[in-house]
Image (cartoon, rainbow, N blue to C red; front, side):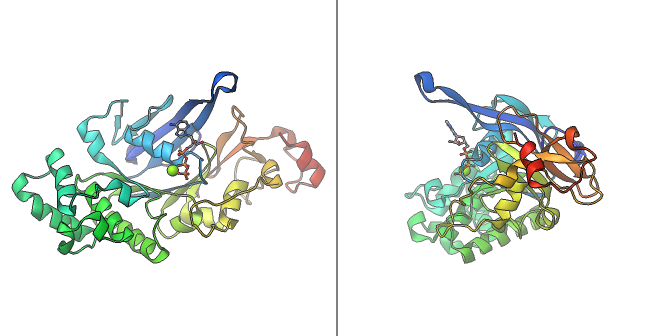
Length: 343
Ligand SMILES: Nc1ncnc2c1ncn2[C@@H]1O[C@H](COP(=O)(O)OP(=O)(O)OP(=O)(O)O)[C@@H](O)[C@H]1O
Ligand SMILES: [Mg+2]
């Protein structure tokens, strides 16, 4: 849910209810000093067991949002409610346990000198999940959960493939029974076939343990098979949010459309998106959608956009400003009309 209009689902059902999260950084020096809004009023609700995709190109604010939810990044505005409790700037052990994060590079997340058993045991003991005597049994159980054989107990990161390392990182995150797992580009560095294996694993984990997952990716192809709902983020703002099927069959925001059309680069890392003239035009709503004629978010800091519900039935939101000046006009823009409505 975007823009602070709480209507996506009943808040009491949500596991995570992040409202209007704003994060800014002071950047530059001297007369070039300015404030960069990495997140501008970003809201999202995730239900228990939901897999929610957060998709946007590099620098759009995905990791900043993930870090804010985990308490690793201070927020300048907004409110994070987790399982009915507002989380403060300082997180207690239980808060930290409930929200676990898996990063893109499994090699960097694991100490190359530590065996899998010692890496997982360290977390088990720190969070007092089991006694020292029970550690090995629990490690075997966790490896089984991520579909790795127990022969990996004594392996070190250098002995494993990228996919196996990422499974170990996921096992370590699961060691503390989190309720929300944040996977920040967790499959981006892996081969496509290995990515599919990890995605299947995440789906199984949700199925069997009802873990909610915030799955972060920079293109819409990866999230398609996995996510129940998807939020699209652009320059620190959510521009569209809908269920997976609705978003793919009826993308409204020009940026979402471009993301869907964009061809990922061979390195799989960044999708290059050139500015598009149509981004400045009128958004055409599907027949029956509420909200009248909308303009897309002009994507200028401080612009008066809001998240508008397109259609309650489909629970689909898009960042736009309601444009009374074009009310009653044809829903089809001609070129001059589109130009005159530019910001
Ligand atoms: N500590 C910081 N100081 C200054 N600027 C920052 C800091 N952290 C993030 N940023 C800026 O905030 C914006 C969002 O960064 P973020 O890392 O959240 O993007 P991202 O969507 O995760 O990108 P990627 O896909 O490359 O991981 C970027 O412009 C980034 O340069
Ligand atoms: Mg990132």
